[in-house]
Image (cartoon, rainbow, N blue to C red):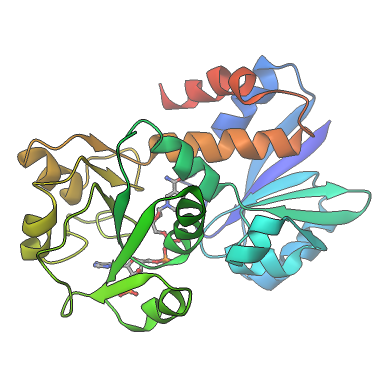
Length: 263
Ligand code: NDP
C-alpha cells in the first residue's frame, strides 16, 4: 500500500485526507492518505524519505520549503516558486503546483470575465496571478502592505495599496486572496473600496472555503453572485491525485469520488 500525506502547520482542519481517501477507495487504488503536522519546513525532504511516503500535499506555511525540497520541478512550479504537490519517482522528488490550475478551473463558469481584482498578494495570489495572466485575464492586485506588491510590480502587474487605489476602476471578478475572514469577520480591504468595485462586478469569489466570509456577505448584500473556495480546493486535489497515481485516472473519474468529502 502506498502512503500519502499532507504536510502543514496546522493540518488538523485539512479536508485533503478525506478527499484523497474517498478517491483511493472509490477507484480501488491501494493507497492511504494521512496528515502530518510539520513544524520545521526544512525537515520536509528528510521526513518524506524516513516515512517512505509516495506523494504529499503541502499547505501553509511550507510551500516555499517544499519548492526547495524537490529534485525536479514542473515548469509552472518553477515559475511561481511554490510547490503544493510532491511525488516520489525512482528516489527523486518531483514538485508541482496544483492550486493555481485548481483556481482557474473554479472560475471557468464566469465566461465573460476578463478583468480580475485580487485582494491580497500572498503565496496563493502569486501562483494564481501568473496562471490567470497566461490564460488571458488581466489581473490587478490590491494589498494592505506595500512590501508584498513589489514582486508583482516587477513582474508587470498593476498593483495598488489601500492608499493608492483608484476607486473609478471597474473589474469583472473580485477575489479575496487574503486570510481576512478565515478566523474572523473582517473584510479584506476598506469598505469604501469594496463599495466602489463590488456593485459593478460579475461575481465575487473567496478562496476561503466552508464558510460565508464577511467579504461574501458584503457581495451578497449587493446581490452579486458569490462563490467560496470549495471548488478550488476540490480541483487542486483532483489534479494532485492525477499526479499521485501517474495519470491512471482522468479528472472526471476522480472528481465524483473526491466531491463526497464536501457533502
Ligand atoms: P499568505 O500568508 O501568503 O498571504 C496572506 C495575504 O493576506 C497577504 O496579502 C496579507 O496582506 C493579507 N492579509 C492577511 N490578513 C489580512 C487582513 N486582516 N486584512 C487585509 N489583508 C490581510 O497566505 P496564502 O496566500 O497562503 O493564503 C491566502 C488564503 O488562501 C488563506 O485564507 C488560505 O486559506 C486560502 N487558500 C485556499 C485554497 C483553496 O484551495 N481554497 C488554497 C490555498 C490557500 P499583507 O501583505 O498586508 O500582510
